[in-house]
Amino acid sequence: MATMLAFVLLVGIAMALYPGGTWLDPLAPGHDFLRNFFCDLTAPKALNGQQNPGVVFARSGMMMLTLGLFPFWLLVTRLFAHARPRWANVVFVLGVLSTSAAMLVPLVSSQQYGILHPLLILVAGVPGLLAGGLAAAALAMTKSAPRMASMFALSTVLFVSVDGALYAAHVISGQAISSAWLPSLQKFAAMSLVAWMLATAVASDRRGSAPS
Image (cartoon, rainbow, N blue to C red; front, side, top):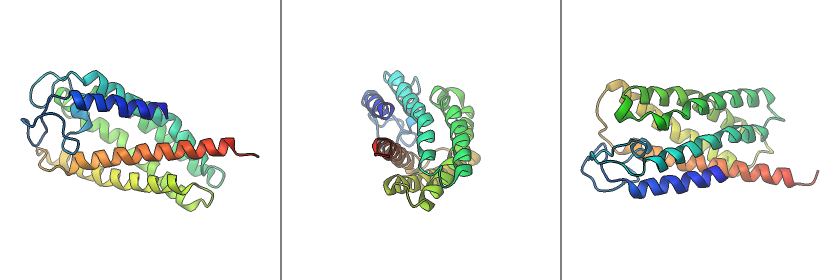
């Protein structure tokens, strides 16, 4: 839970310090929660051309979220490993692969590294989506799995799937961002993921403290 709280705090500071600019409107003042991407916060320069004083906070916050995913994949697989051990092993391996690649994303902004940024997102996203989808299915089919974790697992997979498909189409088309759907869905996916991580941590803690 500490990594998730650190993520919220650090990214919140980065949002407050962001000078301004979105891909839809480079002259927009300050940070727009539904129109700015997380990667806008991790770039040394804001989209309005000014230096971004919150870049260290943003990168640190995103790194905290990513680090929190390593124990998350272990905890979430324990919720259904007794019923579907093979699924649990596959989910854990895919999750760790995805998280390892995701650690590089905040350090490689699209403004500085161009196509390398979306490539890293796709490399991290594909195994992550597979892991999330399998975990969501396993939780839904396991009677003893906590319903809250199962619900947020499903919502996370849905948000990430739609946002990922739109992002892949955007990268393939080579066209500029023309809609707020992408950054907006990214935020909803992130909030759902954090909720899933919290629900999993709470469920694991309750199981660990339950009398045997």
